[in-house]
Image (cartoon, rainbow, N blue to C red):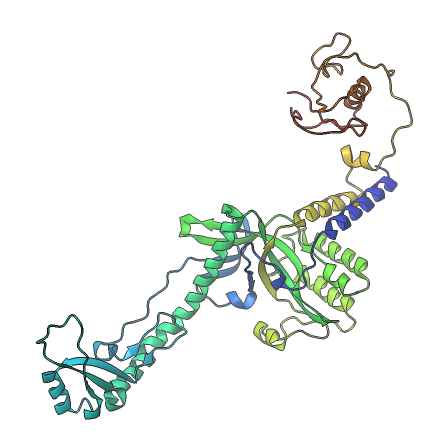
Length: 464
């Protein structure tokens, strides 16, 4: 392929990419991405840090593993001692401390009432006659409701405080991060089902983003990563349902459409720079959130070129603190990574276009076949043979004898509407001339299609 044809092919791919992007809705924030059930999924770096059963940046026989989450079982809270059990309101949530009941009501007989009064366990004004139930017999003895108050039982109150501090609090400190791991596992398992098992007509993709952008300009705010890389979810039943997140073989991606909408200048040059850095990173394991050298040049350059006041702020402040600060009037790019899911749209097509562009830009790689024919001017030399209209009859018939495998061997062509011999001859000539048409695939016949005779279309494949 000549240099001019190669440049023409690259321009054609650029045009196709822009056409594909016309139908894409611009997402400025991660919250704009919704799963089929209307919920969102975004897990930040802070959400996985220092949690039990979670490991980062590993490698096995299959390649790098960026996130590994074990399937943990929740532990129930410890039971209080019998003497304080009736006075404690206990929850299974480690984030909700037990509550001591200020009072409780017990129903007792007259004898038990008298004993409680004698021991000083109940105040006389806290004694009421219990209402009779419909199921009680008419001669049933009266019963009494006693209101027992914790203020009258300092020993029990002290025992409750001792139990909470010495037994429940250590359990909660250990269980709370465990529950966070369990919650993350459940979310990832939901994503796994949507991606691998199905359950929805809309497919989704899982993306690992690097370099979260925080910027507010002209009433619009951006909160999404600058670099994206598709990842896949694995469920290892042999290890108790262990979930692994590993990158796919596809190269990293980026989307400058939000910045184009916000009027940023110099985007073509920045796009070329990012592509170049992505190709350099692809020589090893590609862009990785755990290899700073793979994304640092991209993020620092983007911060400087997207906004004159832009800053690249790696390791400046914790993630939660940056979130509390809200949108920034000047562009800020952190080194934070985020794992999120979104509906799969044209991103796979865009990746294919990007791969084709990379091949076309490599002058050491020959380009032939259909790609070359797309950008090569048609031959001006007449082909062999003369125009000889075919006889009437079966569309697959010829006037003369034919042998299997020859150019004149019968094959099926289906026109659902009236046709003429010239149209059949056109199909034969396309089939005989590989520079005009390339026959690919296996046997397939068009049936029940609708094609107008004057704007005809015929599809055929060599029979096996």
